[in-house]
Amino acid sequence: IYTLHTLFPYTTLFRSDAFTHKQISQLSLAYEKASVIFNIGATLSSLAASSPRSSPEGIKRAFHAFRCASGMFTYINDNFLHAPSTDLSREVVKVLVGLMGAQATEVFIEMMAPGLKGAGLRSKLCMQASAMYAGIVEEVKEWVTKGVFIREWSNLIQVSTRVRGSAEPES
Image (cartoon, rainbow, N blue to C red; front, top):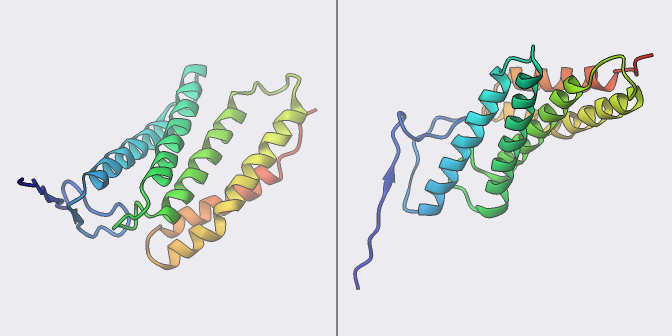
């Protein structure tokens, strides 16, 4: 019986670690699958972030894309245990899941029409978003010191934690 071993060589054009930019090659089809799912999650995150939020459709699209991105990253964390690259490591993917969830919560808050009933709910959601950001602040700081994430991520997450945490209900 012959076994087919396919090496997936990645060049900087096709596959390198998303954060450290080291080239990765693996014999595992599971790694290829995880890489594709990671890229889908990253694309969904990018689509959500660039979605125009001036219309209800744009806000809904952004919310849905952030939730789907979170689901993609959650799937990676639940199904791929030993990643040979930093971007697919459980710790980094866990941070990405938390970040996508916090951003989806922020977009949901944007969907709520200001001035209508539900100021208490809006305040609770703001506190939830703040708690979600606070839950990943230390991990992001650690990855910044390791050169994986850029410092701006850490700064933005810290600001988001404080801004959402200080939101007061509307009268």
